[in-house]
Length: 195
Image (cartoon, rainbow, N blue to C red):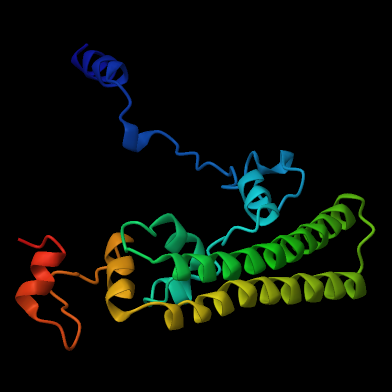
């Protein structure tokens, strides 16, 4: 009788989580992206490329203290830039934007072609290699367009303006601590509201 009571109590105990079978999810992190018009590009990617946006391609310049024209124009009053600088930077930006829009549309077309070939199951190795080559070349051109534009801005700016830009963008270049060579430290700090 005691044995039956112990067995029935044991069977009545709840099953712990560790003794339950585990089922790992096999869901892809890409789930939901299969409905994209171009699988490899999000709607935001496409919009950014169509508008000539940076798409993160100029980080090597931007994050190493070489200002980009779009952000210089956004911050022109806080840096501050004079009218001649603004005019020159606007011209650089306009040229860059036009080239970036053109190349961005080419990249979208190549990605769309790749997507279509896979969707219709008409792709072969030779075609895949060619499309990937086209995509790589287009991305290279697009990145060059953005980075080469960053190369043009330092010649238009003073060291102080570049330092101010980097501080405003939040890039760890502490404007109050990194006084440019040749400047009086106290005046520099006062001018930049460091007190």
